[in-house]
Amino acid sequence: MTRVRQLAMAVLSVILVGGLVWIGTATSQADELTDAKARLVALQGEASKANEEYNQTQAKLDAAQARLTQISDEMDLQREKVEVLRAQVAVLTLQQFQDRGTSSTMALFTSPNQQAVVERLIMTNMVADTTTALFQNYILSQSELDNLLREQKATIASIEADRARLKDLKDKAAKKVQEAESLVNRLTAAQQAALSNANAAAYAGGNSSSKVHNPPPPVKNGAAAQAIVNWAMARVGYPYVYGGSGPRGYDCSGFTMSAYSSVGIKLPHGAGGQFNYGRAVSKSDLQPGDLVFFYSGPGHVGIYVGGGMIVDARNERVGVVYTSINAGMPFVGARRLL
Image (tube, rainbow, N blue to C red; front, side, top):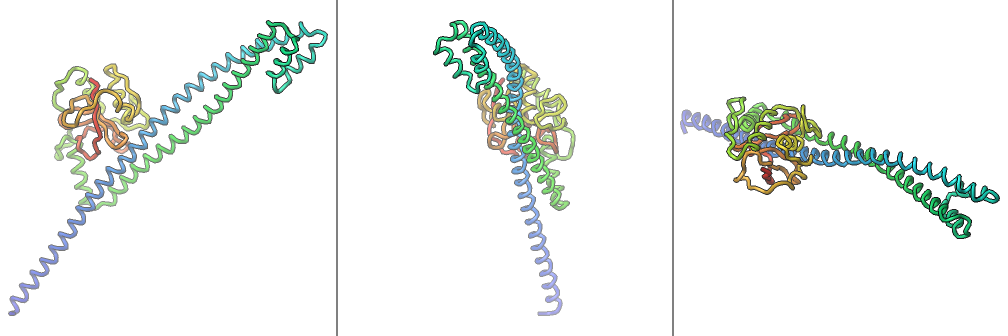
């Protein structure tokens, strides 16, 4: 082999080895980017699940607080009733037992088992029928007051537990969002640029070269659908707020709940609850205004606005966004209410 031929072979070897290294590096980076995208979707799903639990717990807390207010009102009325009956019992007892009534009266009001005292008095015919009825009414009223007091204590304990649960769920969701951000930060500059371009294409209606949203096509399925689409598009960019239903911030189901409320349709605050409304439609048959659901549970909900696009309150990092329905969230169903 001549020296020129040897040199040429050496150069070719360097080129081949360098090419293989570059191809290997590129493949590795592509795999890392694919894994990062999959992990981001998983983290978003976990955050959405925590957000959905947050809404369910908040609804439970709201109901408990409403019941606590009701209990307090009932207890005030019951206390008044008990005091009136107590006074009547005292008067009647003193009237009917002037000679021997002091001991009976004291027994009634000091005994830990007032019901037993009343029954004993009745059995020994020491009281008249009207007084017997009064005694019974007094005992029942006192028992109702005791039951309300026990329910009040249990409700307060439930509220305290729910408040702690809300904090835990909010922290859990925030942690998942932070993990997603850390994952992106660990990518190379080239990988971050590729991910950014992919997101830009999704969030700008498929046009990665422009930050201006391509508007959805005209709505052809009614004025109510158009009103919902207009309402949703007008709030793109609003912040995400846990448990929020406006007017300054929303979570996913608070956003859809408020959108439908604008056309007179009431929905519960929760993706799972909203999934029970309307009728099911396939992804290929979507119309503007349809509710679209993502992640198992479902754990997330948005509004289809046409042209393959949705508007949803995504998370604390991005807020309310206008994005492709195929931007990475696993689609689990859609419901039509209009």
